[in-house]
Amino acid sequence: MREKHEAYWYHVTFNAMHNLVLDNPKSMHAHTFRVGLYVTEKQDDHPVFLNNERLLTDYFERYRGIRLNEIHPFVETLPTLENMAEIFYEELKPIFAGNGMHLVSLEIGDSPISTYCVGERLLLGDVFGLVKTEEMTAYCERVRERYRSLGENAND
Image (cartoon, rainbow, N blue to C red; front, side):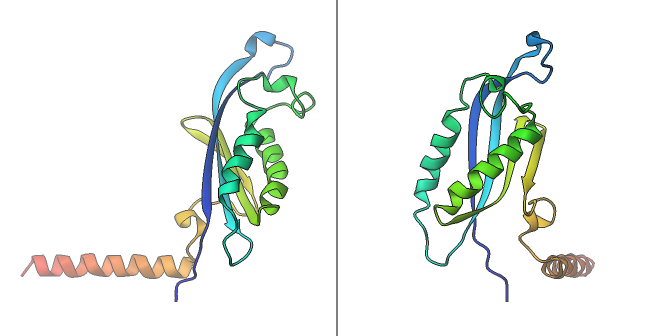
């Protein structure tokens, strides 16, 4: 029997500027940051998950259209993707928990080709880690068998 897996995947974008070379203010530059959050329910009955959208909007509002280096916590901590991910993850975890949800992982990117991920379980690889290896192996074998039988029938 297949293990049931239910989750929500939220996406938030915000425009902000940051400077990674503090002694050169001219290196301040802007990005459209993309944040993805993978969230599961902590209980069997459905929580009021619509509140999550409002919680995320409220949380990220403070970062929209600003210079990240000028606000807490990025006055003290360089606003790299890695640091931003760690801070957002640690701050959002209790917010989701208060809404009956569990933040499993968070990803953030500032370009179309790279994303940084942080969390308890990174959702990369074998179909986002949602399928057990044995199940994936069995599925692949069924597909191979189907193609073998199609090839045999084509020779008839």
